[in-house]
Image (tube, rainbow, N blue to C red; front, side, top):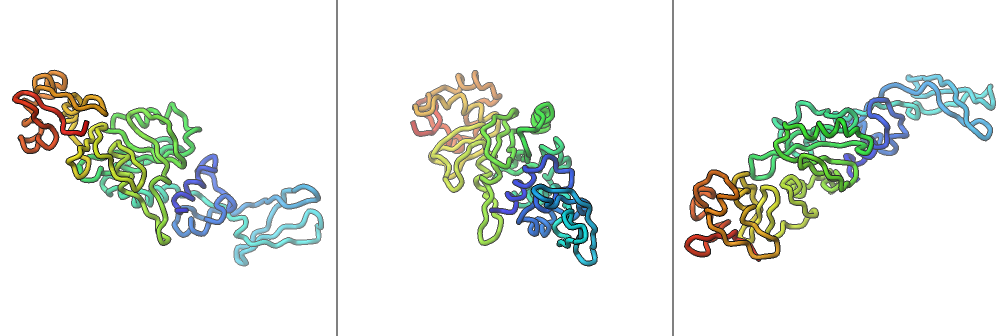
Length: 310
């Protein structure tokens, strides 16, 4: 499994990311987390639990950093001194900011679109930055959510509904969730996008881009032949889906009709009355008859329909 996912699992297990954690919390991934600077040594335990008869007893330890050892007196045989590696009682600070910064790089968030206010709800919600929707000048916010079931809604809801987010984004979690979020945000598991190939962490940018666009298909699958979700349009004659302006999307929404049925034939007067975009004609809205013809076809002298399969 990717080290990014292993670290996410680790920080999900602790009550808070502030206090120091023991080496056992990091388990077999400790060396890798240290190498990546996602944790840092931060002191030692001064007392440990040791076997005593059929139970355990807490004893004070003597630390010898030069020798890399700690010692304690056996509670069962007071004359006996037990010696153990100092690494067994090292305490570690979780450096989640470093992990988040590395995650931004893996996702590919452009430096000038990195968050200037990363922590939105302490211990629970971070804003990584705004990820570019491929081939556009549009950006969607990307968040990381931790222990969401314990996160106070009184804090997470205002953070996600902040008007600073011009469109819905993605909240990355440790595991999948079907929870609906306000402000058109969606939740996805980080594991949906990260895999390991030849020992390297790989981020599935194509799958992530489809989520940002508002249309989700499984990793590795191609886009459907046609769809229309939010401002994203795919028609059979398109090589790939396109992001429409909000005004053009209003026009298509009026003309889309019911999925599975032939699109309705409509005059510009009827479309304009319902969409009320300010455009003077289909050609005005879509940049001329040739560009318009890629999306809207003429059926007779005064009526048009969206170019799509019935």
